[in-house]
Image 1 (spheres, rainbow, N blue to C red):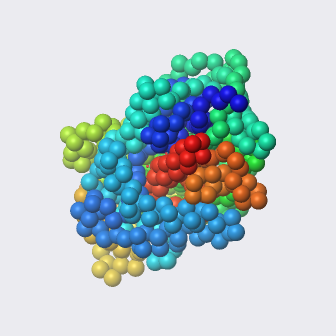
Image 2 (image 1 turned 135 degrees about the vertical axis):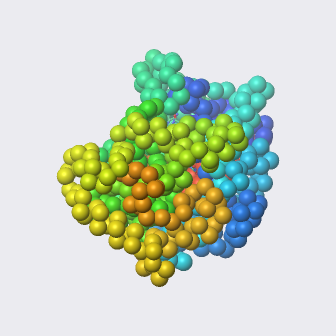
Image 3 (image 1 turned 90 degrees about the horizontal axis):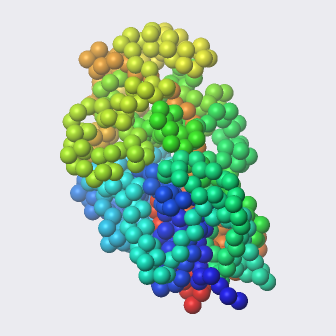
Amino acid sequence: MAYDADVIIVGSGLAGLVAAAELVEARRKIILVDQESERFLGGQAFWSFGGIFLVDSPEQRRMRIRDSYELALQDWMGTAAFDRDEDHWPRKWAEAYVSFAAGEKGPWLRERGIRFFPVVGWAERGGGNAVGHGNSVPRFHVTWGTGPGVVAPFAARVQEGARQGLVKFKFRHRVDQLMQTNGVVDGISGALLAPSEVERGFKSSRDIVGEFELKAPAVIVASGGIGANHDLVRQNWPRRLGAAPKRMITGVPDHVDGRMLAITEAAGGTMINRDRMWHYVEGIRNWNPIWTDHAIRILPGPSSLWLDARGKRLPVPLYPGFDTLATLRYIMSTGFDYSWFVLNQRIIAKEFALSGSEQNPDLTGKSWRKVIERARKGVPGPVRAFMDKGEDFIIERELPALVARMNKLSGDDLLTSEGVEREIRARDRQVDNPFCKDAQITAIRGARHYLGDKLIRTAPLHKLLDPAAGPLIAVRLNILTRKTLGGLQTDLDSRVLGADGSPVPGLFAAGEVAGFGGGGVHGYSALEGTFLGGCIFSGRAAGRAAAKAVL
Ligand SMILES: Cc1cc2nc3c(=O)[nH]c(=O)nc-3n(C[C@H](O)[C@H](O)[C@H](O)COP(=O)(O)OP(=O)(O)OC[C@H]3O[C@@H](n4cnc5c(N)ncnc54)[C@H](O)[C@@H]3O)c2cc1C
């Protein structure tokens, strides 16, 4: 049979690019297919904050963080809580991935030119239990250059491969089917989409101008998750998190449509853990949207007071940045799909970061001058823009006026000024109490013991109603869809497994579509910074295994 290439890769996001870079290194001929135009190269990773999970890294050691493989594995397993028969491969991927993160990952990425911001972030601080969810230590390494800095080295290798005649790009090719001969996946077919001039990240047309068919002895599916497809999110919504939210906003571009999952299942691949997902509870509507219903996630420091729709403080230990899915479950149990941060100017200046490369021009532009300005000048520019123009932000000097506007914004009229004041004053009273029974205040004190938090993430402890701390701020927090934790079941070579557990010949999968490895390397929940790394690790495995398979 005449093949068009040795390997076809569906998806030019991070996982597809990493797989392609490995295949270039192995001197294989590749066709890289994507439904979007060349401008979208890098997929979601381009927009990402570039946070990467590393264990016992030089950056951690410099910040006096003592980490180890054993501690990280304990945290991972406590967070994943694997408990299903189908967790066989996810568990193996988890062990391999934590070992990668504690060993080869840092040096391998540095060898490719990736560098990290020296202050390591502390994401998902956990459920307050040593064996349960959360990071015992800071592990979130922000890439210098954020998402584009992660994508660039792999894109450059693949583009060099194209110059050498090893890589052909086929943009605006939408795959609708995986082709098979005698049970072996050996090609793709689909629709040729009309050329598109839209800028990166914007919704592009799905107008069809033709058809195509391409053949190769191996196909790698690297098509991303389902986050922009709210129908699929709702259809697979886990009952353990309550009813699916009526209103969600979207944390991923429109191309994260999940179509390839059913297409791969039709070719014999098995999707597992479809009810495992990672959506955020601190979503704000972007005042300057790129994709449909564009949501930005606040990466919060620990000091904001978190109130539910009725103005009741969230239960212990649901503090900002501690346990995303437990917070989501609680919010859904209230019968409303939003909650509130109440804070002040002093807290927002130090503690609000926004996820996304375009929201962090200092780090994305690799500008030390701007980074220093951000630390010195109070509220960062992108956060200020949301305070001025974001529909979810309310700023007032007096609490009654703040609460009146909160009621107006939600339209639910559930809050009373007295109720909100009672919560705030009860909390503020504990600030003066050295025996303090408020666990959030104890957590803030704990965070300030970490140099990184003290420097740039946690405001000194103070009373929320202290007039010197600036005006009061309320932020309506919406549910934001983002990551798909389940996916195509794969073995450690990223081979897609069929219903009987054996590989579907010729078929590989990597990145979010494969649950970042195995069909769900995270289990039920995540430690953060683990998604880009999962794309890199599974993309590399797929590239290496496909290179061997087509020898
Ligand atoms: C704003 C934002 C911030 C983030 N921050 C972080 C972070 O700090 N740390 C972290 O670890 N993770 C982060 N993530 C998550 C991470 O970026 C993604 O999980 C990851 O990049 C997914 O990569 P992927 O290659 O699997 O898929 P994608 O990037 O979604 O790429 C898939 C590609 O496949 C193409 N495709 C899909 N279906 C078809 C089809 N049928 N035919 C042809 N082409 C198709 C798509 O057009 C797309 O280009 C963030 C994500 C976002 C959006």
